[in-house]
Image (cartoon, one colour):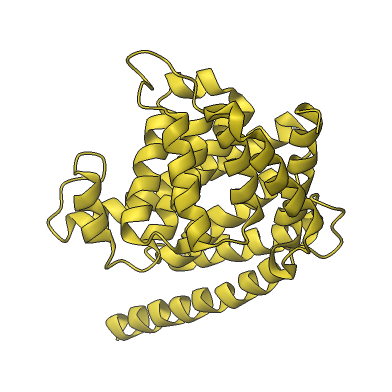
Length: 284
């Protein structure tokens, strides 16, 4: 009788947890409501975060709500928070959520006979994790959150804590699992990482503006209309070769002049603001 009751409780918890995902997704889809340019209201994204957190609590081994929680946390930090202290608090929460998600992946991969996520090669992890729904997205969004954390805490401080290597490894795993996720997101993360990482001997000697341009072009091939990629690419092009300035300027002007995708209104409006800032910086 007790076993039946326990089974019923587990099934009920799973059903309730599954019900939280559509609620979170609904609020995620409405995240642009009330936005002002690239700044979003907290209302819907806070509701999405809360729904995904409930889903994680009820189904802790399910990676989909964990990946969506990481995505929502990053959105709040990037497009809702306005002060450095607010951003630090949000991205610290993202780091904790990422650690928990990776621990779940680690246990699930261990059950498949794989060495730990940190000790196996990137290809070994990707090959095994490809069979885990949501694992690729966890690696991708954890890398993104660490990138945002690095920007708000300072690039050199982040390098000393190993953030750059972690971002590089996780984004590479995500790219090996599915290079097309999030409109070429993994290559976009890697390209931006190469362009923005300080060159510190013996720590980040791998960082290369040439590699940044290559990776961002790969991302752009997957999603040619992605305005974030186009802004990152324009900046990387000039960083790598100032002679490409006219081409980069034209790219940024197109980012500003073309309509935004309604599904990514806030993100693309913020990219337009970044494009304007770069044009001012370049005197264009």
